[in-house]
Image 1 (cartoon, rainbow, N blue to C red):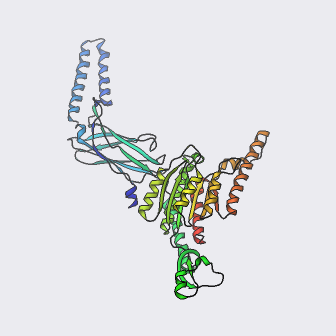
Image 2: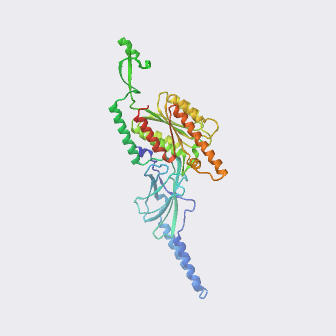
Length: 458
């Protein structure tokens, strides 16, 4: 059901002439005209052969006129574009083009689909044969380059008969907006993580852990050492003695996805940006958490809040998350991390797991994102994810052979030491930190999330 909802619509349109002059000679007719030039060779000796060339060209023109008259008008062509798969970044998307003509002859058609460069750098070109009153189809594939909403424009058609002396040019208005979603990881990997999630849930049910969560389980008499905040005063008043509440691990826990869309995540890794990898990882975690019964919310920010989706569950909520992740865009300026912190604390006053994907600015002062993370940790369990810079690590590990390389080596070591110090500060205060490469980030985050579930840390 989700696949159907996420697939773009299927526009249908009748073709119309392309321009005021919507026909021309096909290459075959030009070759026939060129063959008439052969009459000029004997015409140098016998002038009557020149009339032969004129007669040949007139015959070709007559055949071309007859060929043109039997071609159906563009209005007799109906074209449809159908999206077979969901457009997702870095994954082959499949599209089917259908053409039905109500003329009286067989047509040989060349089709060009006008897609945005963000979808396909080279417009797809197709060739098919259309028989009268029979729907002809052809499929093509491409890999979308960017997330977000992009335009798919008109479909241009060139068609000719089997004789092929004249062709007509038509265009069908199939304009639509196509939403490209973050990269979706292969189903095999998702099934492995989901199987582990179910195993963890079964273990927790067998253990029936009490006291670690905040989900009410039962009442019992107060014992020395119990937290006074857990005393149930209404039951105490009825019984005349102190009664305390027992809690168990919550069956449905809130999980928040926080994404930094500032300048630091504009850096490209291969054909994608760091933000693209962050969106892909967030989508993978959302699918896993929702499958395990957790409620998931999302907050993406730059200088202002770009996208926000409240806590929810179910397939319709996953659709909302996917739409929001598709529309998160890079900003050229530094993100306002403290604004995101305040917004999230206002939206989620109770304890939750927060996945924060960001990066650390190389400044002399403590980055603002660290201050924001420390504020979140007062209330939430924070999984703080930054992307490792492999080129800096390689430079720090290399042996310098010149004075210039020595300075670069020292600068790289200082950067790595500073990043590790900042992450160590968060770990000392109780945060979970993860520094990984963009390509390995999804697997690392999902494993850490399952570890949190297994240890009942929220």
